[in-house]
Amino acid sequence: MQGVSMSQRPYHIDVMISAKAIAARIEDLARLIRDEYKDTDKLVVVGLLRGSFVFIADLVRELEMNVEVDFLEASSYGNATESSREVKILKDLRGAIEGRDVLVVEDIVDTGHTLTAVLELLRSRHPRKLETIALLDKPARREVPLKATWTGFEIPDAFVVGYGIDFAQANRNLPYIGTVVFDDEGTAEASA
Ligand code: PRP
Image (cartoon, rainbow, N blue to C red; front, side, top):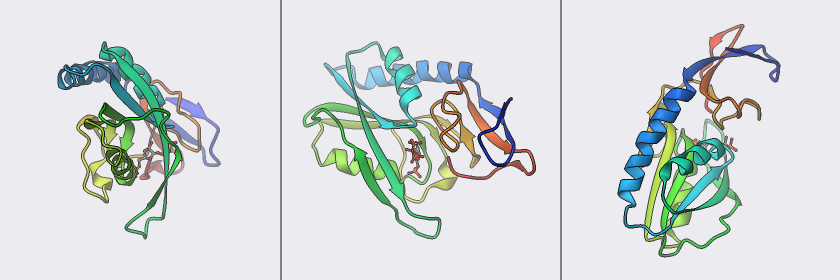
């Protein structure tokens, strides 16, 4: 779709999920969330940096309810041969969540380690209600059992970028979800 020169290896990006399809799905998801939190005065919407920044921006504007927006940044360390990973909190929430209704927003659930660790941390702070939403889910890559409360799209194990998701810190600003295709190899199999 778009020629890019950020990688050593030349690649292009094919559209997997269009901006229009994402917008339509977010409208559906927002309805489900509004219903689930209909008795909530002010929902704390927590975006996981950096990948969720586009999704959370579009989602909160569809919610049409009182929200507080906060961010948390976690990073997981490990390699493919390790069954567990260390997840570090690089940036914590600004606000307290004890007794509050919280929705964690993730761009993609891959192995599941990041969201599992984040949920464990947030649960220890005793929110009243804690749910999760992920725009994308790659169930084939899961290493720990985890399912977000709501998922936008289940996708195969392809190398996806765009709509907040990067490849070597590029392509986050694409308005669609695309797959990276290396010109010398065809569609790459890799994690986000
Ligand atoms: C990506 C993505 C998720 C996480 C999912 O973040 O945004 O947070 O990986 O992977 P997991 O399910 O295997 O834990 P990344 O660490 O690439 O950081 P970023 O959001 O800043 O791009």
